[in-house]
Image 1 (cartoon, rainbow over the protein chains, first blue to last red):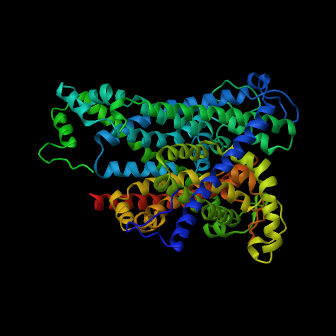
Image 2: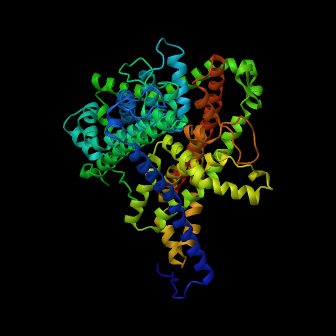
Length: 293
Length: 326
């Protein structure tokens, strides 16, 4: 860093220079203050998680009590897969369709309202979403705690994320592509399905990946919808575990064996989430050439 | 900033030209997308109605005022007062904001005004990683590392030397309002700094250059050109962080200490709305579940109010800037 010099060639006064240095120093300190916890968390995860990680952990289900050592989290991985999968099936088509409306058709008050409340919906506490699904599905229908209820709750969390980020992506599709399609006689629906969406494929994939990463890490809404289970469950309609639930319950119980398994499960969960996040970044960075700017 | 020549039909006009001879398929397609986007409005509406309906029995039995301002929460006796939870939620969120926002704004300033592009890209990548870590992992790290190893000595220090003030009164347990607030402050940094960066990006480059041209240092440039333009945007960002902090569940459930009480000292254990919902849900009987639903309605109303205000501020400030810039 060179000392700042004013445009008239006079050196900047000591007082002003000190202020400048103080301000920039505070900025560096802030960056450090947020990266140190990140480092500590990742270090903790690696040390404790790898310490408890075994082949058995990856390939077997949890023992029936938190006291007993050994076993794994396969039942939780399967549960997370079920619920995130169902949530994706619900929220991706719905979210992309809503984003198409907002970007291709939407104008005026209705579009403004949808956009605004989609933003607001991203701020709804996830525990509230869980209780809502509990009140709607579990209290009002014969279906009890289940993968279906959990999947619906996660879909509600993914939906606004997918809508808003897909809309941003669709906005990047150059208008000339649409014009070219219209000029060939294509209707608007055909243009959207055959030109606009294919052109933004990798961007939409990015949005989906980020939403999936977010849903995979959600704990609170699953407490009141999926409930959790220590058994391997492959049914859609009975209580089921998920990785975040598995970790939460392991942490809450005072037994070392359960905690050790929670460490390994946390490493597994973060690895899964980071893989999705990295894929998302990678897809975003290699999108079609015309859309990069 | 590019200016479109008015002689061509706008993109919107060109699109509607194609619409003229509407075909049936086209109409259905459009209607499908309208329905999809209506679901958001519908869902929010249904959320409010269902939760209010399924929790109304607790408001009826305790009275709205009795529920909101009741100090006691004794499920066995059917007494449900939410004040300790409301208090804990507000205290932890305020701690998160007070600690997290300055850090987030400084990071945003560094990334958008000071750092070379390559460095900024890498640092923002890392800061965004903080947002990718699931909250249950923060909770786990908090209870096994942060609170016993990092925070306990700090709390002991605060209690010994500032204990005379009500805010830092001992004894120190470890789990406390402060432990939740500080972990939340780490968690809100990515969202607050991301929104701040977007706000800073709307400041016209010419104003920065004008400040630098009259000999301002970089800090003076920030103070003269960047911050005055971004004030309301930063407030919006803070509100978004606040919304996040108010609703965070698992970190609070694990680190708050689970004590249904109101303490002036941030070193004492307490409770938050989201935490009690998560902790007591599994063992709750029917009337307690209704009470927890009631709590979630209160939480929802508070966070939605905060979010709506935040979004309005952000939308208005960026709109205003766009108008000035164009």
